[in-house]
Image (tube, rainbow, N blue to C red; front, side, top):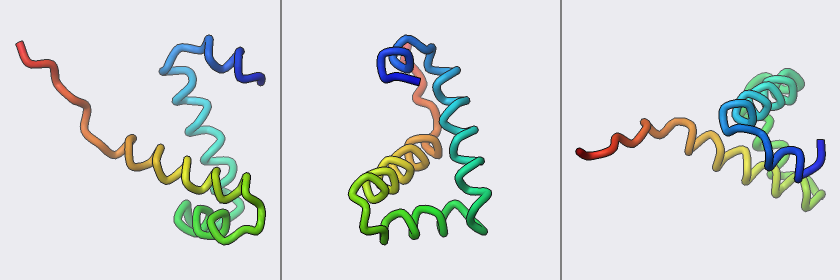
Length: 70
């Protein structure tokens, strides 16, 4: 899928695709932590960047939703 196609997806659908992709990638390792560690230690700059993005996604995902003050 191209970047422009991804940009047109609703956030919910994009989140679902990200989680599905993470599950598929994580199936190759015993844990997501092992996956991120392996990607971080890769010689490939793209894989190291992916590790950083996965970590950021997981940290954001773990944050409780913000409530709007009324």
